[in-house]
Each structure stands twice: as structure tokens, then as C-alpha cells.
Length: 282
Length: 253
Image (cartoon, rainbow over all chains, first blue to last red; front, top):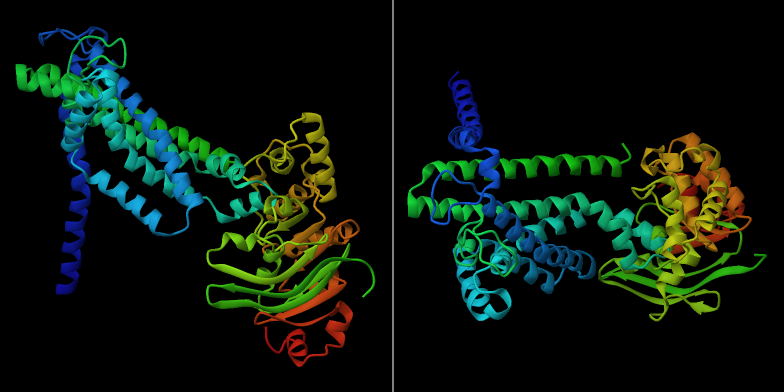
């Protein structure tokens, strides 16, 4: 009987642990949305913030800035991570080079983002100022690329590894070269996973603040080139809270950010499911 | 043995790391005929045919010595272009492995990677290859459908069609019917009878009845050695070696 009671208690505790994740997510989402949603209007989305942080304006330039730095980060990280994954999975055997590169990616993923930001500040903002424009979309995007890279490299590699060996053999067996096999059979089959990896990376980039804090500059004006300083949404939330104590606008911006991330996650899931089904002929 | 020799194997040895998978194999494969390779699992028969299109190169730590003479050259030479070789010697795998593409694109895959872009020519090749693999009538109205929607037996014939589209001389078949039901299997066997008129076929099989039905010569492999190689009738009815007799009469397997 005691054993049975312990079993029941254990199940209850484990259930609670599982449910806790859900509850925490719902509480955060609800709290932000309840406070933030009332602020969202056409005006809020399309007007620029007041240069001195006045309330009652919009966040248009910060949305543009988020899209811009994330875009730059993906443009740089996507070819590096997909190329690196192809090299690791298709062109090296299980040897030291592979282990070292994989380990390097893991260590890179573990570096605190403020340190990435510090490096970005010294290297991109100061040292490469003639090219990056100092604090800018480009400097911010480059720093974010370092954070996207290890995630999408890892996931791309896993997706390539998941492509059945029979497909590789089938293609090579027909006299295709390795490169032809990769581009025509292996990559299309691994594509849903690779895209998912990039989206996860993009999610990381959109939500990142510390690396942006030291590299993007925080200027609220609408950007005209990648060398302009900018203020993505996360940094804007930080700035208006710390400098102006403007919680209202912070909630509004946070709500937009969260909705954007949710929308990207669900749309990608949906599209990748459809693609995978099509690939399987369903 | 009458007729021309397509492939002549001399003193072939092969190792995976320290394990010797093939021991001093000598065998001559006749042209435009079916040669069956039989033997228990792990006897080296699959490894042997994978040597013929150099598919073993994909495995880490593989080493081989000896000669495989095909069209006057040793295909084990390190300067052989394996990509070219695989156009001439094609492989049908144990598990049907169509690409996740349409039926048409599967068959057109080989010609396309070899540079044929002309739609009309591709169409002709696809039709000829599907007819050659006895599957045209079943798929002619659904060429744009995914190949993965076909049944297992249809997928395997599609894979054979995909191979024919590259116009090889030799077809290697690694237990091509082992994943199929009896009806699909008999269709594949009928197809093999048709194909041997134009192709040299080497088929690995676990199924001795199948070897007896489709092949004119049979080789019995055991523990990496070629124990006996004779006409199929002789090998099954008058085996010279005790080990062959024990295997074909079902004493072990």
C-alpha cells in the first residue's frame, strides 16, 4: 500500500513538474500580452519613436532595425553553417578535424552574449569602423551571426546525417558526383531541418539584447543603410525602461516582439510540415 | 564456360580494418547472362558486388588487393574514375531507394546529372527505361506523382528503370527482392529474364530457389571465400564441395 501511495505521489509531482513549464509560459505570455496588446495600433506599428523617448509614439524604426540586424545575421550565418555542415557531414570522416570543429561550435554557443557583444564592439565597431560604420546594423548583424552560427550548424549537420544512406548510394550508384548528389538529393531531403535550424537561429537573433547593446548603437532614427546605427526592439525595451522608466511602451514593444516570434515559429512549422509531406509523397 | 567474359576477378582480397571480408577471390563473370551469388549472411557476397562498382569506397578503413578486369582495365586501380565506372556498372539495392521526387524525375535523374537537358530526349529515355523495367503501363498516367507513393515492388522496378536510363552494361543486384512479397518478387524475376538479353547481371540472393530460377551460373560464398562456382544446375545438383552440398541441401544457412 505504501508503495502504491508513493507511486501516486511520484506521478503527481512529475505531472506538476511537466505542467509547470506550461504554466510559466502562459503566465509570461499572458502578462505581457494583457499589458502590451492595448497599446498596439496601426499608429504604434508605423510611427517612429520620439527621439527623446516620449511616450505615445510608435516603434516603426525599431521593428525595421530588428529585421535588418536579423537579416544580416542570417545572410552571414546561413552559408557558413550550411556549408560547414556539408563539409563536416559529407567530406570528412569521423576524425580529429571533425571533432575539433564540432567542439568549437559548442564552445561558441556557450560564450555569454555580452562577451560576443564586447568582442563585436572592439572588433567591428572600433577596429573595422571604416567598413562597418562603427555602431551599425552591420556590426550588430555580424555579432548576432556568431550566435546564430553554432545553432544552425548543429541542426544542419543533424538534418544531413538523417538523410538515409540508401539515397546517397542510389545517387552515387547512378554515376552522379558527390557534389551532384549533395545538391540534387541530399540537400533537398535535409532542407526542412536546415531551415528549421536557421529559424531557431533567427529566433535567437531577434531576441538577443546583450550582443546588440554594444554593437548596434541604439539610435532611434529610421535606418537608410547597413552602416547606420539602429535600435532593435529588444534594445529599445531595455533603453526605455532604464532611461525613461516607460513600462507602457516596453510592454507594447514586448508584445509585438513575442507575437512576431510566435508567428515565425508557427508559420515555419506549418510550411516545413507541408514540405516534408510533399517530400514523402503524401 | 562458353561465351564472352565481362568481368574477370583475380586474387581479390578485401579488408575492413583488420577483418578480412574477401579471401583470394577468382571468378569470371559471363557477358549477357545472370550470375547468382549465394551463401549465408556475412559470407562476403554483398561486399563482393559492392567492390565491382567501388561502393565499398564509402566505408572507412577499407583496403583491397588483386585485380578486377573490366573492359581491359583494372577497376581497382586508384586512378579509375569511379563516377564513370558507376555509369557502366549500376547497382540495384536491397531496399528500394527511390528519391523523394516524382516518378519522372527519378528516372531522369541519371541522364540529367550526366548533362542531358533536352526535355524531348529526357521523355524518350524515361519512357524507354520504364518500359525496359516493365513498369511503364502501371505508371504512364502518373509520371508526376511522387515515387514514394508506389508499392515496394513498383519502387524496386522504378529503381531498375532509373538504372537503365544511364545505359549501363552491368547490373548488380543486391538481394533485389528480399523486401518484396511473392507476386512482386516474381515480377522482378521475370524482368531479370528479359534484361539478361542485353545486360550482364550479377544477383546476390539468400533465396536458393531464386538463384536456381534466374541464373545460369552460381557462385557459393562462405566466410569470405568463393567455395564453388559452376553452372547453376551443376552447383545445385552435383556440388563438388561438401560445404556447398551442406548449404544447398539446407544443412546450414
